[in-house]
Image 1 (cartoon, rainbow, N blue to C red):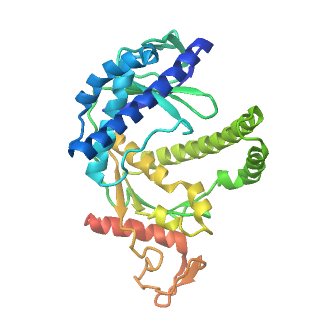
Image 2 (cartoon, rainbow, N blue to C red; image 1 turned 30 degrees about the horizontal axis):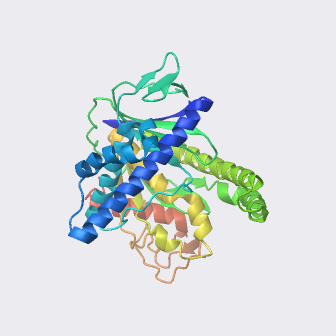
Image 3 (cartoon, rainbow, N blue to C red; image 1 turned 180 degrees about the vertical axis):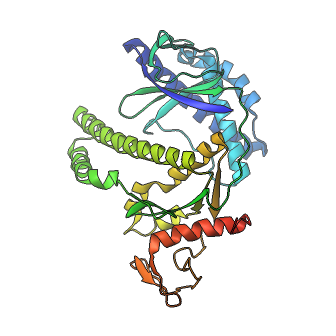
Length: 370
């Protein structure tokens, strides 16, 4: 089973310069390789393979001596990344590979092999770099695969290590109505469970929006290209990073709790991009980050042999009474509570939706009444 571990690096001043060289060189190779593939297809109707591009890197190094200062396997790793991007494009028919920009908030380069991790001494040995200090807060056992060194916009350095621990993914355990929970994701409450429990939405972006606007104004008022503008952009990036870290921490804790307490979790398939076209709700939807939360549920479920069930995005989970099945077609978004005309049950919109999401998911599995 493959697992990724991320650690913070504490490079020396010389190592920071070398990281910048690796990032710049790898970005250059990626863009150069992408340009070659596009040009080859336009002229011959055929695309260059990764092997063909790697052979040309040798002559490119002769023309550009500075490429020789960088780990050659990292350069070849970028052509592998490009090949993966094209494979994904042809498989999913969307997302044609784009040229990499130095303005991207996160810059990185791959380290395919020949690196070691020493937990006792708290360092990582990288090709061309030697020993780099690292905050190794979690230990792992297994075969080291590829690693990726990255630099955030706030100037922090990290390494993500992919490890094959030799374990097989567990088979999904059996589940029943009593061991399944339905979740309705929302804006006012981040998640409402079929048990009736509501998890308040922390709204990290909304709580920091005033400070963000102040910092964004300071950036816009500084002269382009000046050091003061760079300092202002740095302060803005630090706040954005804090908001992202808060959101990620909240979602990790909640997803871990749900996976540990239940055998199966039922969620609704949401068209987030379509929902964000509503400009009144776009910021709140982005702040909630439902897609990343469901992604965390899915990969943690795989690790522990649990199941994530999805229902279709057009299922009327909010409009159907979970008690008698009455369909209230005129229910609007502002109706947070409604009374069923048939059974007279007072229904909380979100709790009712969560119960129905669970019911619809179990119906698909033929487990209603188990």
